[in-house]
Length: 81
Image 1 (tube, rainbow, N blue to C red):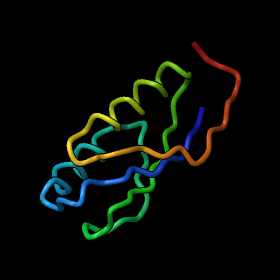
Image 2: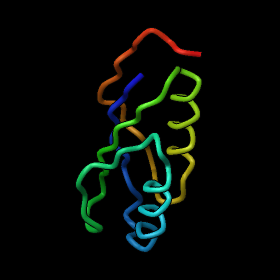
Image 3: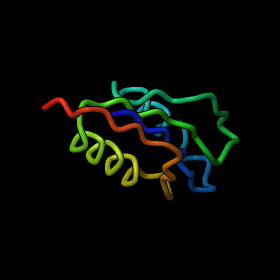
């Protein structure tokens, strides 16, 4: 299961350096090009099933510095448990 999302960031840029490190540490996330001045981060999530997708998106939405996560695209494949 693959999803493309855009994380909408808090205007407070002081939260962004720590957030970038947290995103990079998650193996299921591929962070697209963004600059510290940007208020949006494109992210691809690649997981095995919908439960992992829910866990990943919930984690994203609850990180300090992220206001909202917009889903752009989701590709459902046969689930692997």
